[in-house]
Image 1 (cartoon, one colour):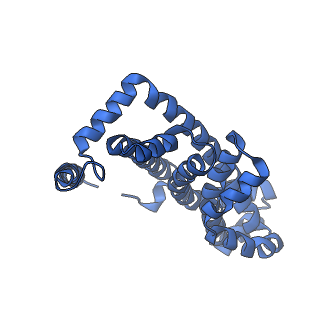
Image 2: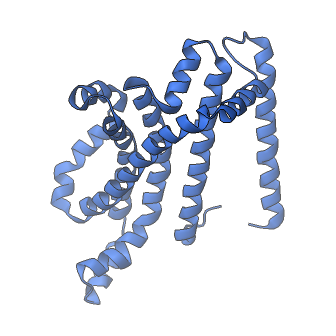
Image 3: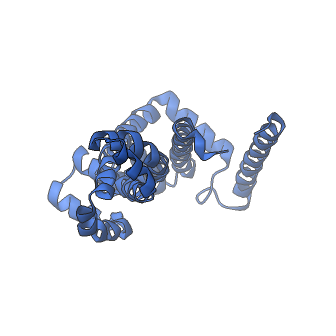
Amino acid sequence: MGSETRWARHLTVIVSLLAGAAVWEIAAYFTTRAFWAPLSETVGSLAESARSGVLMRQAMSSFQLYLTGLGLAILAGAPFGLLLARVRVLRVALENYIMMLYATPMVALIPFILSMMGFGFAPKVLVVFLFAVFPILYNTIEGARSIRPELVEVAHAFRSSEWQLWRDVMIPYTLPFAMTGIRQAIARGLVGMVAAEFFLSPSGLGQMIMMGSQNFDTAGLLAAILLIVVLGVCLMDLGRYLERRFAPWRGYE
């Protein structure tokens, strides 16, 4: 991508964000403050929460929950997806269950998790894990299944061991697909984090959203949501950067 094209793209993004901020600010003056708060007031509430220490405390609680669940989903989803793609009998036996769970609204499972595990950190991590693991697992399986048979045949012709086949063919070829699943899991994991903090014991940013809603503090509510959105965008951009870094041949812009 040329430097002029890159600058034009950056300029477009900046103009788009400024236009969105202006619409947010102006829209607040056509509605009641109980329904919508202007961006300036939302940012002010965010700054006040940061100064009081409440934001840092709640954010750290949420991020610990989120990163633990997402990390476990990555560690479980990617290797298991490769294993299912490699072992056909196992994939045929479990594929329908995976698809059913992927299509299941995970929020509906929260009361069941609550009845089994109660309140606390572990059931919340499980909720985030269930939200995040299936995009990683599904995309990894599809990536590994799309490996051309000729590549596997060449590896066998050079007497590659099973570990060498995984290291030199399956993992490099599947990595971009797994990273796509991780980017999807980043967003779904955030939804799972907020759902866990809503429906299990209230804590973190989810508690801030609930308190803002109950107290008609729209600025505080939107401030917590804005922080979650910024976090999600930053993490997805990080995932996109890692995808370009480890799979440059796919030609990402």
